[in-house]
Image (cartoon, rainbow, N blue to C red; front, side, top):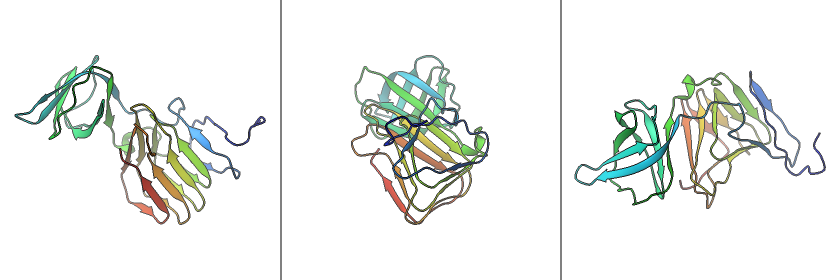
Length: 212
């Protein structure tokens, strides 16, 4: 049942096997972080960030245990500071990494999100074919085996007015067909979009990547 407004439809889907996504003209379909498509990357809230200018090392203290491992690739969002780096675990509640840029003085909230190998995640066996329009809500994580964005199809990430990390993880070969478009980020958004590919991504259509 679509109701009276057919300009936008929001659909929650649990992917149990391969998925073919087909919709009628004019619909936009949205998957958000509340959907059970894939697990969210391990994320920890940041309590404080310090910087040693003599060694160019940033140390991050988290609210509670962070659960990260030595060498993990972690994205840090702290006020206007954004950095993704391989970390060194100091202890259960802190980690460090090298950075030539000094984080700003800031007393608000921040997040640290680990980037994981897409092939290691549950859901990585799913192959998705998109023939119309799909939006991944800001702050979500989508983990797939492969993505086929076919002619006329569009895949984009949602706008975020606050700091967030949106992750798209593709384990196997994926393709963006001619006359289709893949858009990562959006103008004026404060969020960060990460795409991790384990195999070649062939782009014959349009790829738009926004700053951040």
